[in-house]
Image 1 (cartoon, rainbow, N blue to C red):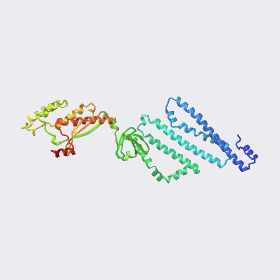
Image 2 (image 1 turned 60 degrees about the horizontal axis):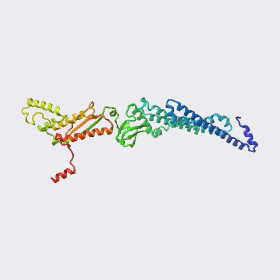
Image 3 (image 1 turned 45 degrees about the horizontal axis):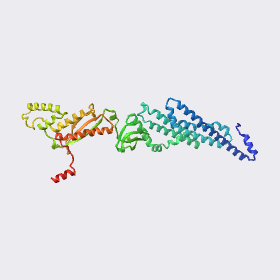
Image 4 (image 1 turned 30 degrees about the vertical axis):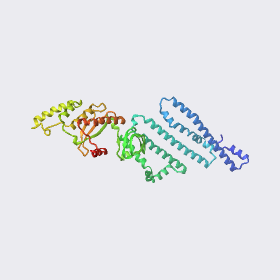
Length: 418
């Protein structure tokens, strides 16, 4: 192929065209030929290159190339083929186009930079998907890192494209951007805060994908779905999605239930209030009644013997209930609940298990159950907790215990009728 395309120019002159229109017609033909070559090379890339890549991917034993194929890395690479045609034939085909040549080459450069940035972004996504299943990276905010690198990627691409359009060095733009640092910090404030927060969350192992977190200030209570550069997505237990700013996990307080999930049980901490007037010293009738309770039989017998021996030796008048030591119905009730919890198949007795008496209040004396259920799943945990307190509430009357409850309208009506 003649590099100056003089025969084509002479042919156009022989057809009666002037020098100007012959040059214009030659330029149009040359541009058409160049883009035709680019189109042919694009078709070659799409039809041959991608088919070869697909076949090699299917034969490969690793799934890494499948991830790259899924993210269309190779498909985006094929879009570079037309640019290769222009670069290969620009000196041959565009030799006589003058300023038009530089416009076409500049446009091609912009095209290559844009496609290159898109390819890098697809590679970053692929690398993230490759690393996510690995144990070493499961607790790392890979999405945040990838998003930050994407910002840098497209930022550099934008600077290069603008420098080509205005025909200035990229360093010229960078020096101009230095004066806009304050504006850039304001524009990217959330991204900067999110990036710093994601590093702190990762380095201190504060949250991971899959953790159950509660952020009351944002109404979030559920599992962490995704940790991004700017936000953390939490799937609540009503299947709604709450988006919490990443830096909120640093600036605000939140609750992470991971330690509970990894421990041997989930805590049960709930109380019942005993009406103070129903508290009394156990008489013989109540003690005999308590001896028939499996969980209290041995305890009551040993305590009666211990108390009798003490009252005979340490008290002058041990027959008086005020003097000496006595068993009370609230004490036996507390002991019964404790023994009941220790025998409960769903209570982890290797962790703290106790029933403690709280300070008397206007609502009576509180008996607080503090133990841990073996099953940590929320639904099962609530069922275990409900079963325990169903039993406690039901057997309280057996100890002549009255549980406190604020009077209702029915209570006042009964009082009025009496």
